[in-house]
Length: 514
Image (cartoon, rainbow, N blue to C red; front, side):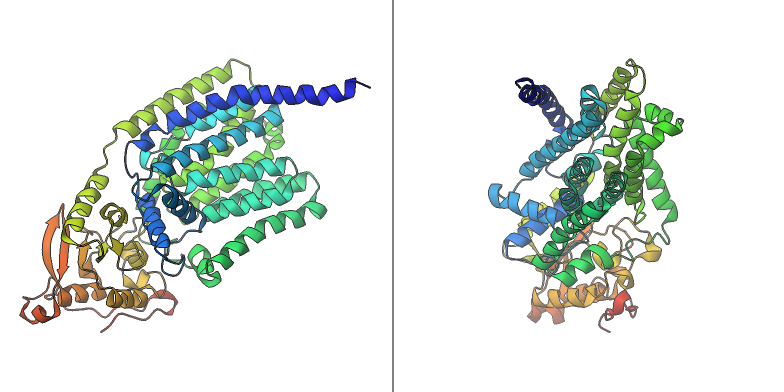
């Protein structure tokens, strides 16, 4: 009678001791791998975009109405909450949260591996994930942006599905989607685990309810039509590769090669596992997770480095499963190779120059010097962090020229212009500039295809109301001229160029003024 109650207690102690030993090691490793993230105020324009959005939301802005981006709402809300608690002058709180997100992902993967293949496999999975998680360009791996905060949800979705908790699995899939749309790809391995367990009749309704309720809730809290447009239907031009095929292919090959180098310790056992059909079929859910993640990287045909972060959790688990089936001496080799690669990427992050950040800082300093805190400004470029660094309010909801020209994603000139903008954007842009005329316009195009000289609406605005006031690193500053002095102006910066009638924008947007 006394034996039965003792077994669970012994199991609990063993589990507690296991995590008590492993968690501190994973926490230290997560902190070490993220050290470079703390040495710069910003790592990429996505962080700047989110920071500006958070400030606008704190000032009463409405997501998908006066604050817009092609992303779901969870991360802007997280930035807003962090700024409310800690102030909006630094991204350090977000960097700390990014460390915690990476640690949580590693713990969930370790728990999955331990349940499947034992204690040692759990340790291996957590360590391998953290070592490879920084194996991309520092701008992609060290930034506190969408993929870093999406990955804990994707790992949680699979973790819950592995235990038959279908409602929670659906909610985790929804949270991944609401962090970034491609997070929804994890639904494929979750659905396979549901099918494999034969729980369709009881589990499918719970999975569907867990998935749909948070998404519908987010749509209702923001604006249903705006939520649908900005997260799903409004990105057709952005996803096209027409005119940029070689550019996109080069980026895809480069980032694939970088991640392959970082995964040098993982790939050999994974490739070996592929040679055994039985081993591959035994872990089919993992291969489906990797395939779904690869599809998420490819969707939209942009292949930015941070997209590749989504591949790392299933890749770490696949390597762990393969190493579990190989002789013991293979595991230290894989971990050592991954550690050496990790050290190189950490060094890269600490030493890599950031010329664009330096440019944005100089531009922000000039902008802050020439305007008052209450002034609205327009930075015509792809670096929204300038607004945040200068602590100035944008004159429009469109924080980058990309939303108004389709330059987002580094598109080449054949698909850049007013007619490739987000549907309906230019009429809204004109109304906002009329209502909140910027005291200063910064043309930060620097020869790119979205330069004002190629855009009739912006060209006419600058010619009529603004005069050049200075230059910073190739960016041109235009100050607004008082109405009484405009008649005495010399011809504007683009007055010598005959205006071209703009083509109608996709989706029925009205053309610019004639």
